[in-house]
Length: 172
Image (cartoon, rainbow, N blue to C red; front, side, top):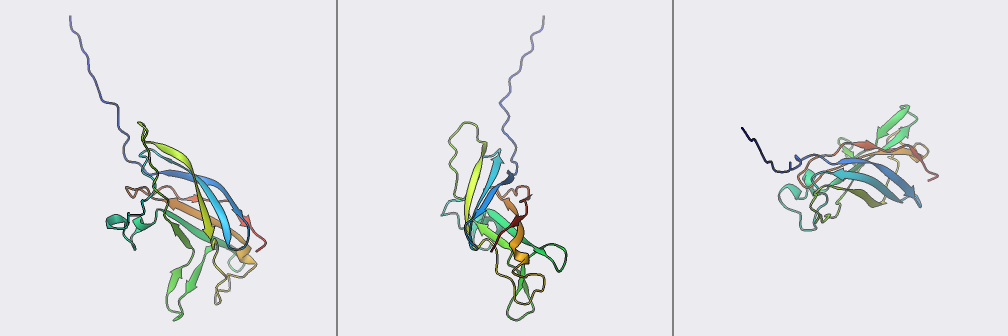
């Protein structure tokens, strides 16, 4: 007679990037808006503490911010959505003025299951840049039609999927 038995530890989820999707976007004027997105993170390591400003979270690194949003406007000139680039005063260098970055506050997770899911609400001040002076495709009319792409990083610097919003049209 043989008896076989085994035991195993419950599996710890492998580090995985967060998964995000669009929730909603509302504006109250030409400068302010509220952006909501949904997230799921199996590791449960979302957000940054105010003190997270060194090492991988130092200013100037990708980890300093954990929420990134890129602005696209409808270009009648090109007949498609384009990102907003603005020339520096010397006219030789282009900067990506289309990216808005924020620091999501650290989310404390005291549950046994470390996974998190929920919504994050971001108050946007200056959610769209002003039309560039020397860019024929960026007119006041075209910049009323826009959309965003956005992504986040968790504390382990895993990048989420890149999500795209629907197209918005504002009277501003």
